[in-house]
Length: 205
Ligand SMILES: [Fe+2]
Ligand SMILES: [Fe+2]
Image (tube, rainbow, N blue to C red; front, side, top):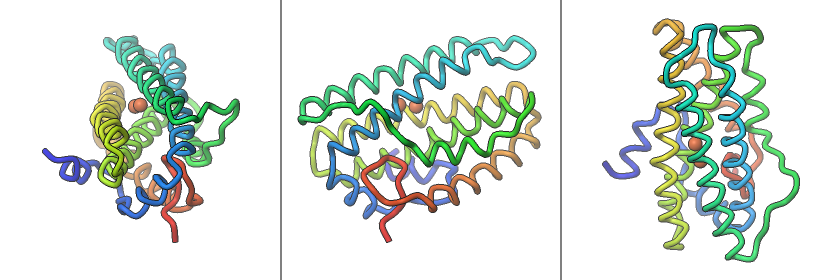
């Protein structure tokens, strides 16, 4: 399966045009800094979810979360290495309005709170995968293109993993209708983001 074919297999409700990739790649160091924070957040989010299993102990839960955290820490190490080699460095602080907006979708009270948190994680993984696919296609820099291609596969695996965990404690019809609502909201939230050298930025108008 090619990257484009696998990207169309993603469940997302909007598709990122190649022009977005070309625009954000005009500032590769700033894009790498934003990307590093995304990986850091993904790792700490998995650690945070580790002790939030549903009422019933779920087999494989801790293994799933430690696996994601380990992958994301590896991605963070990789992106930092590329960033430093290109003369950049991490900032101390970082803003991610896209993720903040998505977090507003999380309903309070269990079990829906955990379900929504896992679905938000799945959305971020699926969108990140899609964006890495576009970046791999848009990049004329061989190192970056190969890096983004490898991340695409990994983040696809993560989005499926989060969704599969939801299946373990949510009825199929309840899960499907909430997932579709979330996908619709995600496309709207992404479309409302400002353009700029960020993984989850808006498309230049
Ligand atoms: Fe990652
Ligand atoms: Fe991930």
